Length: 260
Image (cartoon, rainbow, N blue to C red; front, side):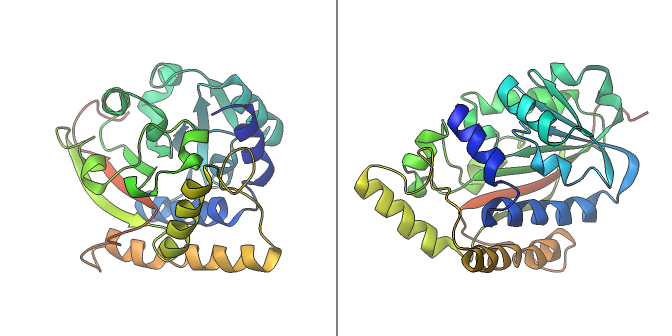
């Protein structure tokens, strides 16, 4: 990501339907898997400009890390009560690793050429029983100028995502597509962008603030998927959504360094 995309995130991520609904869904999944407690450390790797992690700060001890000094600077300015560090994971987390109870990787892995190597290094550093919550953009057929503007290397299928931990000691609690209800609209927008050769929003992306009532409606539609995902996570439903613009996974590390 470049300066324009970071500044766009900082400007709209607390209001735009996609950011808001995704953040609420992740909060629900995390709360269902790791009940809130002030001493439970949640690390957001690739935290960007900070709003996702800041939304958890009243319930958990939080640490955000990002390789971009610009992103971390924006996060620190906007959320001074939350700790943010600049550097590469897992090294930048350092001596805090034994205390980590959950790792968030929210739309991060698609930015990394060697995603298997990055995921494995973070997994190895995490303590036993650590929870991982992972989101990625889904469906290679949705590739468009939006992905190029953000420096994506790929969009994932569910099999491609699962490959990241297939050889690791992981308990898979949830793997599902999401942003499924709005998929027909997203497909149409991506086809239009490919036809025009440019994205329809700001800074070379698809992100643009819609009218307030439209933004509110889209937030409710997207966030409405949370109930289905929670039912899959709890075992009350056998499977998640079969298609969507994104994928979400919740995992637990079943072997490795014991927690202190």
